[in-house]
Amino acid sequence: TKIRQVWQSSLGKKNANAYEYDGLEIRPIPQNLAPDLLARLESGRPVVDRSKTKNTLLVPLTILGQVIGVIGLEQDDPDRDWSEEQITVAQAAANRAALSLENARLFEESKRRASKESAIFTATSRIGSVISMENILHVTVEEIEKVLSASEITIQFADEETTKKGKQREEA
Image 1 (cartoon, one colour):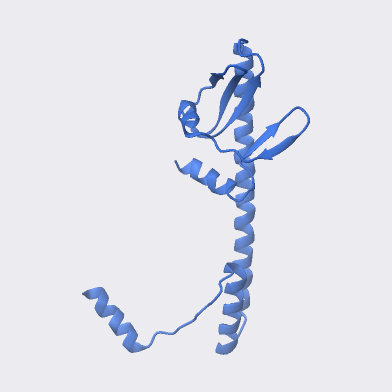
Image 2 (spheres, helix red, strand yellow):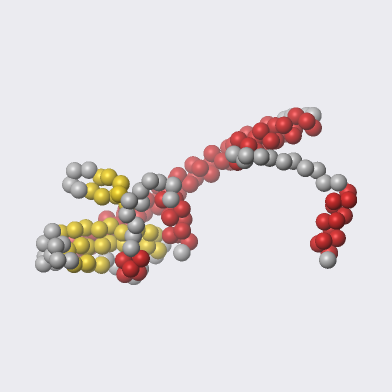
């Protein structure tokens, strides 16, 4: 889904896509959400996962109905059930966290776009202020390199013969 792809792209730039709190500190951990677990969470409802040693409550982080992650809460007693109140509180926390995370992602995206637009504005302003053709080409190449970090930049002018050949190909 589009939202999940945007989030994966956003997280792809980070070193970790999971975080763990052990009672003392929050630290990044290299862990991926298992596909079977994600499938179980697609309903948007919490999932209880019991093992022999613990009881885990998994609460989806959803944005516009799309699961982008999960909050996992563990109890060391596998026989102890999660109460409705605990599940409701966990869902409310997950909803608030998802909204806050999306707002932070959108803010970061806006900052990146604003920075890029500022660089483009600076580049086009500088290009527009130059008078000679050689200077225009030089400044254009410099500014494009700054914004796009290209390893090589070519500016080529079309001659009449090339233009005719291009039109003939389009008509064919």
